[in-house]
Amino acid sequence: MTIKHVHRFKDRHGKVRHYLRLPGVKAIALPGQPGEPAFMRAYNQALEQYAAPAADSNSKAAPGSMRDLAERYYATGRFKDKSERTRYVERQIFDRFMVKHGDKRAAMVETRHLDAIFTEMADRPAAAMDLRKRLRNLFRLAIKLGWRKDDPIAATDTFKLGTWHTWTDDEIEKFEERWPIGTRQRLAFDLLIFTGQRSGDVRQILWTDVRHGKVKVIQGKTGAELTIAQHPSLAPSLDAFRKDVGCIVVTEFGKPFSEHGFGNWMADAIGLANLPDACVTHGLRKAAARRLAEAGCTAHEIQAITGHTTLKEVERYTAAVSREQLATSAIGKVANVGGTPGSQTNLQTQEKPQ
Image (cartoon, rainbow, N blue to C red; front, side, top):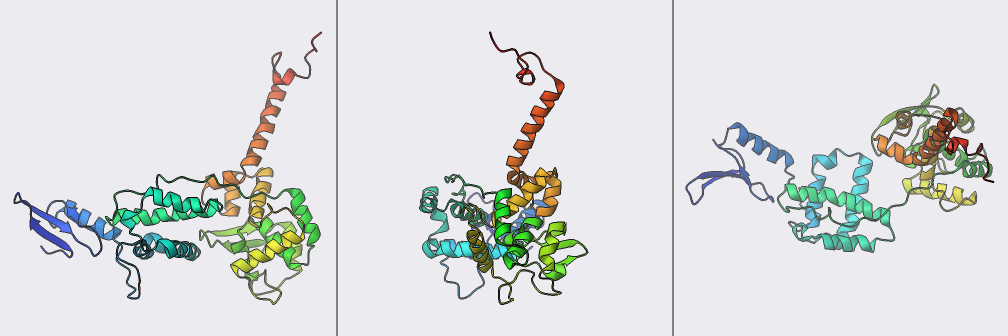
């Protein structure tokens, strides 16, 4: 039986062995004989995991290099299954990385090399950890291709990341005072705070997405399709600019915002409201989650609005609120059941020492 890419030979003991040899990949030993279940299962699994060399004849990647590895990764189902936005971001990150490190052999990269790269980015810990996370995808592929036996990312040092500041009600009120209803800045702000969506999704909401008291959103990062009940306080801002078609938030020239354009425009609006540097656009998403938590919404209810993929992410956004609510609830429970002498509930009734 002849099977594509399978090579047969006898070892020094006279035993017949079969190997799968795919272009650019270390030979893979196959068990048993061609046609047998174990043989065909191993053969098919190897083909499913195989990432062919880049088809681009103009590729400048040296075989076995980090750039070659990245181009093979772009051809995998793992990469293609990601959203268009995620693929774009990942390519941008790898393109910057390859400027300095694209010609290095993937098999020769060590943990100490990666630690040095991340340390150079210590002033940008979030960017360093994002690169670290995405490089894991490349080294996992390198292991599948037989280029490596280990993942050099696993033992690298990590940076402690800060969290986005959650806007307080006072800060929200200060922005609203500076930008009243009828301004484009307030329209964008209200869409952000009353839908709890990322800025990249808010800037792409269309007038046709707002119907019958609901706002429909397809999240660019996750592809999640959400239908959110329109908050009553959002209506006045929408009514001030009501149209039938196009994006709701547009530039002064009536054009849709680019990603960076929207971010810079909102940063200017926040600065003109004399808010602290900690107040950034993404913090409004956290503020929306905070308000939902304070209103008594469950993690599942908040997730249905924010579109977070896991409850863990929601809990991270609302951790401070949960702690405060639990602490208040706990003291209330103790106070209501009474207590023994010296307990928290009797602190106010104990006689002062003579």
